[in-house]
Image (tube, rainbow, N blue to C red):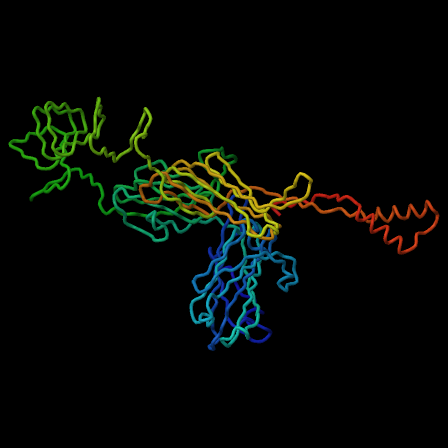
Length: 576
């Protein structure tokens, strides 16, 4: 494991003097060995901190602060953008704030920035820590290896009265290591339950394959198929339609990109890692070479004959399936008539269902009842619904920033609003993209000028919307201005057009947000005090006489009030 408590912190954690914490804090990380990001492969890490009462005496706590260093240095665990997030394993506690503080604000002898999360116990009846309590942090690991110190502040005491609680501190260290090429946790699941492993599927059911790796390109192979069924950089793939028989999937990971592109030089030998997973099918399609049945045979479905067959006095109360050319004269079918080849019907009466799985041409056909189409339908002349409403949209679903794959056509809506207080500085940008489309919107509190050039601050909100085609990837992102005094509210929605076969109209594939640079400019007034004093000295030189002290002070004050404001620009990039 890459998280460890400092020696000095172990005594503090056990509460032995010096304001040490009453609770013991035990860290764990995922992956177990935290690896730094690279320019090609951003790495996410989870740091969980379990808060335990190991003292044997009652411990009460109503607030815990956890501060993780952010930035680009070796001792800063997470990148500042996108900002790390927090979670807690129980509804008894809530995350009340996240602010960025300098180390000196936390009482440390360092100027490192810390993302400081405040966890608050909701009810006084839960201040007694006798239950499972784990705080979680997640973020993008920075680019440099090194040790990062996670700071913990605890508001606690040994009695239930919160007025007696005091702030206590401790810390532990998390180490980020150089990336090592790895491939692990190749697993098959049902798309609707991505965290529950599955080994058996129904014939034709969708199969979701996922894995963990820091590789840059992956391929998946199935039996009896020399070509990969998947090639790409994502670590999740859903096989629509599944498989018909028991199958072993082989996953190949590499760090060299698509092997079909580029040309190796100098005897370059790529490195591959392999994983495999086997799935079984509960109702497989079987193709035996021959079969002998000594007893009775019962066919509950369709009985198909592809060769010449003679039936004498045959009565079919179920389905008759013919795959060759058939001529029927005066045919009366009381059940289902299925036709997969060319068929000529003369004076045919079908009292049940007529199913044509091949090409069918109907001229001047009127359907008085309901026309049901279970497969794909193509309309070459357009589709018009002018006499009644057309409904293809389903309910909008709220989504968080990240990357997704659409399982049906749909619309993505993004909105950025303004805070309740217009006096606070607030700027925010939202962005969305898919398949060559990039949209953005700006919100928050903006500055404006009236006709007489008086200055105003106004609330500003904007939205965007863009279409996404089935099978395409789409991404959403948020960037709050680094100098914000308050964050702008944002929201995103997915509006599917129709439904998907597996019930999920979209799938979240990662927390990765679109990378985009934002900037802000601060206009700082330029002081002209030295020029005013120089002017007064010049006047004294002209008259060859010093101005009396009080008159000199009054003159400087008047000239200061008369000066016109000038400004210089201070730019702040969103990458800082």
